[in-house]
Length: 427
Image (cartoon, rainbow, N blue to C red; front, side):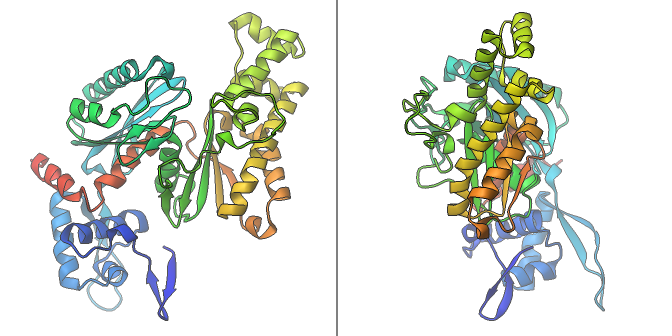
């Protein structure tokens, strides 16, 4: 775990939101330190928090009784009796993660560590509106719960939406392409349906949290998660915490202007946005043009066979050496690199993680993206910078949505409710 030097001593950094000297906050601090920093003995936790051994022992006993913590064996002796080590008991409860994409839905049941127990996916057009979309989500959830009759108790639901979301209320705010979603009570509807707390966030924030807790960025304090799918977005993690911004729209890089003179029309109503150059929808349009004009024989054949071509068809053609498709993927990587250069110079992350459907063509996208980033960013900002692909690009959204709920359930505000649930459900 990283440390910081304070008043001449190296001390473990305790999350700010968990520093209130209340019973719930002390317990939440201990759970978070065991879960995310792997401090596993009473001595470790006393040193990290400054709490007395008696207080820590009392809190640990309560958390062991609830099932949130468990013993995992004995540690190494330093001269006396070997200490008993703790672990976060992620199997104690389950949560649901829901990723609402522009063209698909994914619902997953995970444990408290974000490990998927069952995941289901369905094609869907999110522009159908919130009523139909959430009805389909509810159906998928019921199917999953029915298929897991012996699961641990359901404790919460996390939802990621492809639009700006006010996290405090859990409601979409002026989504540019989602008619009928503005201010829709997503949280209230799903909470009433499933009888548990629900948290709603932008899907890219959820993906970033998934990477922080269980993916490529585990243990990294400052990083950027970039989703390149039908649309484009970024999730920012600073000092080990997700940065949502004042109204929850931090990281919306899709509408950075790449060319003020461009006539490319974006769905936001402006021209020249990054999304019109490098998103999956932009690449799909470019692929269609190559297919219809016959400039790409491979895409023309695909169009004749399937009646349409997509960004995935473009990347496959590029992987097979189609020169125009390779050029399009390379150019998309350059545009992404140019947008990230500004973000890297301002934010100074140590890691950039690329995820989303288009990222599955990483061998075609990453070289030009990296080349642009390292060429155009400040030398100090890139000295130790890593740019890599997501470890679980295909399930990052659903895992991140689930972990959004887990983070809130384990906070001081909700921990007592969770432990009450677990105590009630324990045979």
